[in-house]
Image 1: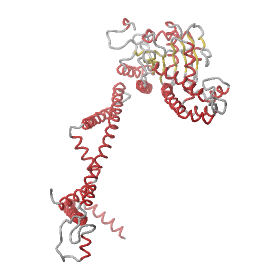
Image 2: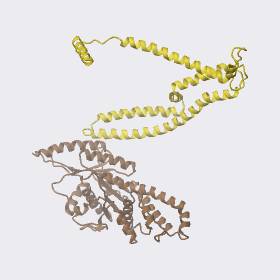
Image 3: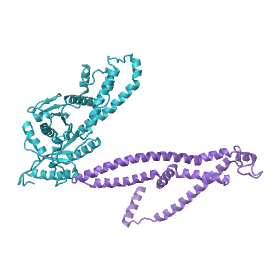
Image 4: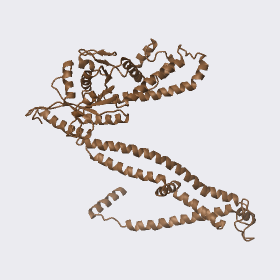
Length: 215
Length: 340
């Protein structure tokens, strides 16, 4: 069993990641993974893909066929088109209902695994000190605040530790995002930074126009 | 079906309506298609041919623009009437849009299917969409059943109308099932309010009325199952070799398939056959266009009896002309030699 300190930190990191990427993204990612496994829905999902592909193929063919010049061909395509459309819609309805169930189950599990677990840990270990701070480091009111709500005074409570983890994670992630933006931004700036070549006549004209505007 | 008539050399089915004449179990025959393609002429001709091989034939027009009277040059009404010159062919014209007022009027005089319903419940029953049309339809069916014709031919209204007409049984059955359920659920409560004998304000009786509706429902569902039986019912599509008519025909055939109504005959009407060396520019151009669509029809409907009927130089009206025209439904028309 890893230390509670590490567990809380990892938990906070997970919550932060889930919040950043968004629940729906994670759900669809899990859905895709679930479908790539040999599950019963994966078969119907791949079938649906195949059906859709066929449907689009037939539709383009149908659109490319003149109904007046080749009526027989057009009508046969039309029959296939209608049949496929019906199948696609029927399949889609069943798949959608499966996906809704899947989504709700995954959402519940995700909540239980993140916020639920956090609440449980904070409740279960509320009286437990995470670690002790040396005596005299902080004034009494600070000690009291750090041990809020129920940990013994002079220690760090799980709530305080969680908050600290969260703050650090936020700071670091913001810093990472900022650095990333800086790097990418400067790279793109050097790429598009060159002035456009403009034929001299037009340039003069352009400057004339701006001058006019300034007047 | 006599197999001798089938042309074995080609894959196509015989280009006549002989199969309908031979199928003795057929009771309901619908003739339908786009407006102005010759539905009435075709249905009259088919009726004449059927009258030769059946005990009794009834021709019903459900087209609001009644043409039977014109075709036979004889006035027909809401009651079946023998066609002049025939002993076993009758005709009648009904209006599927039979106005609700008419039915209400009948009910007040104590006749018709709605008789015996109280005013309030009558309003309620007539609030079901399409019930007026369905009721007049049911009335006709009841008449037809009691008259015991061997074969009944429907000359239907243009496409959209026909399909709606064929849907009524299903719609009405659903609506009536709902009403029956409601009445069985709330009937006891209503009876408690209304008194021991369950009489409604206008002297009507709730259970009695429900019985009536239930009877109507039974008639309709029986007919519905008959319509879906390919041994008893078939649909003859009439079209002309033009794009819109073909388009409507294809749509109709698909919809009929979705209602599980059998159809295996197509009559292609108004074909032009210019004589060899004809100088008529329009005729030759039209013949070319019709040929193109005819080829398409033969390619698309290879499982159908495709009957080709020529466009005549005279109007097909009156018994003699119809009889002559009807011959071509059975023995294919031979176009003049050397034509396009």
